[in-house]
Length: 101
Image (tube, rainbow, N blue to C red; front, side, top):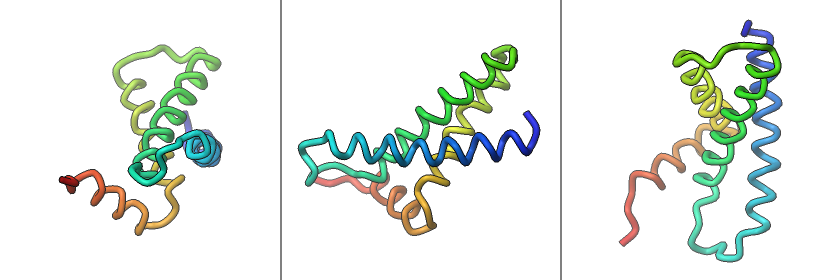
């Protein structure tokens, strides 16, 4: 995967992650007790990793340990790009690290 393909896939996965997140947000009934930033990160991990796996399968790339790591990193990268801005990323990290009791 060269840098051009990486950025094309990253842009597509970030846009798709945003759409998936909005769709899931509309399906959730308990809106008061749910972190939408965490939902966006989970959706982006799934979309980015699965999308990269599909790309690898369609181009005939074998699934080695390095490629699985690339799939996970693409999921994280699409999560960061779908949550536009540093404030959203900071808020997500705070929501994950603080416990509500």
